[in-house]
Amino acid sequence: MIIEGDWSFHQTRCQYELKFSQRRSLFYEANRATAYVNAYFLYAILSPLPAPPNNRTCRLVRPDIPHVAILIETSRSYGRALLRGVRRYITETGPWSVFMELRSLDSPTPPWLKHWKGDGILTRTSNQAMATAISRTNVPTVELRSTRLRHAFPFVGVNNFRVGRMIADHFLDRGFQHFGLFMIETELYFQQRRDDFIETLRQRGHDCHLYKPTGRREQPAQWERAQDELAIWLTSLPKPVGIMASTDQMGFWILDASRRAGLSVPEQIAVVGVENDESLCTMAMPPLSSVPLNGERVGYQAATLLQRMMNGEKPPTEPTLIDPLPLVARQSSDVIAVDNADLSRALQLIKQKACNGLRVSDVLADVNISRSKLEREFRSTIGRSPNQEILRVKLDRVSQMLILTELTLPQIAAQTGFESVAYLSESFKQHFGSAPGKYRRQSNEGR
Image (cartoon, rainbow, N blue to C red; front, side, top):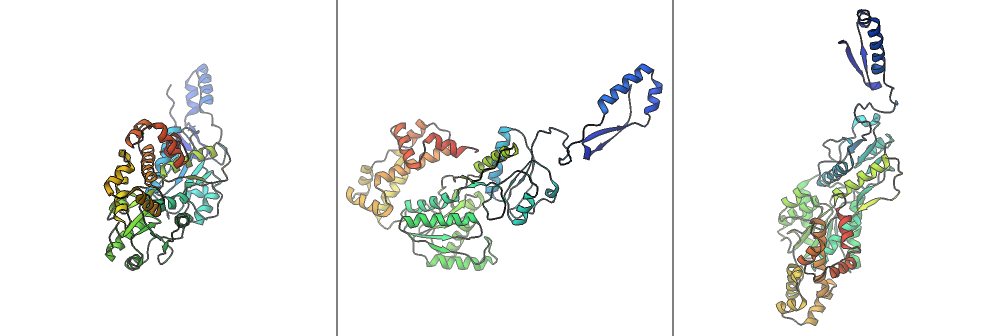
C-alpha cells in the first residue's frame, strides 16, 4: 500500500512530522486486520521523537561530532600555519563540525555567536568586545594570541622569550658589535621579544639602539614620512649593525629604508625579522632572514587542549608555550661582521666547511696565523674557541636536520662530520638540553 502525505520539518524540535489528509479513508478501504497492522506500524515508526534539550542546536546527523568555531585570521602566514595544525589534529583524531571564514585579525565577531550553543572555540582575540562576546557563550575556549585583554581563556602560543635570544645569538655568532631594534609596544609578545633581545645582548656586554616609529600601530599613517624617519635613524647607527625587526613587515621596511639611504645590506645593515612570512621574506631585496614561529605545532596543541576541555577536563592555569623553529638565514644577515681579515676568513671557512670534517689545523693552514693568536681573536670577538665554534656550527646543522628531514641519527652524523652517533648525542644534549630523539619529537609534534 502506498501512503501519500506531505512532510514538514520542525527545526526547533529536531523531528519529522507526517501530516495525512486522507487518513480515515485509507483505513476504511483496507480490511480490519490490515488496518490494525498499519496503525501499529505508523505509531511505532512515525511517533514524534523526543524533543532535544532547549540549549542545543538541532543536529540531524552524527550528534557526537563536536561543533567548533575557529576565529583565526587567514590573512597572515602565522594564522594559516595555525589552521594547518588544527586540521592535522582533526584528521588524526576524528571529525569536528567547523565554522571557519576568511578573516583578518580585526574582523568582527560573527553575529550569530551571541546565541550559539556549540561545543568549543579556538580564537585569536583582537579586542575586548570580542573577548567579552566569546566569554558570554560559556563554551570551552582556547586563546592563541598573547594578549592583555580581560578573559580567562587558557593560552597556547609561541615562546616569544626565545625569539629575541635566537636573533641576538645569530648576530653575535657573526661577530657583530653594534645592535639595533625596530619595535612597537602595542602587544605583549612584541615586548617579550624586545626584552629577550636586549637582555641577551646585555649579558654579553652590549647595548642596543632602539627605534620606535611615530604612532602606536604597525601600519604607518604616512608611509613616505615613516620611511624617511627610519632612513635617518639607520644612517645614524654605528656600522656594521645587526637589527632585529619585531615582525617581517618591519624588516621589509628596514630593507627599503636602507636602499633609500644608500646603505648596503648586509655589509652595513644586517636585518632579521620574525614570523618567516614567505611573501614578505622572498619579496624583500635582499631576501629577509627570519624566525619561524612554529604555528602548525601551536595549532595542533591548541586543538588537543580544546578537545580535552570539551571532554570535561579543567583548563590549565599556566600558558602552553611552544619554542620557535630554527632561524632561517637569508641574504639580509648572511655576513661575517668583523674588521680582522684573518678572523673573518676563519669564521667564513668554519661556516662553509664545519660539517665536512674541518679541523682547527685546516683553518690555521688557510689563514696562516699562529694557533694562540687565533684562539685569542676568537675568544675576544665571539666568546668561543675555534673548536667550540666548529662544534656549534655542526650542532646547529644537526638541529635543522632533525626538524626538517626524516634522516636517521647515523645518517645525520655522517652528513654533519661527527665520527660517531654517541659523540653527536652527547654533544647535542649538552648544547640543547635534550637528547636528539626527544628534541625531534617535541619540535615536530603537530607538524
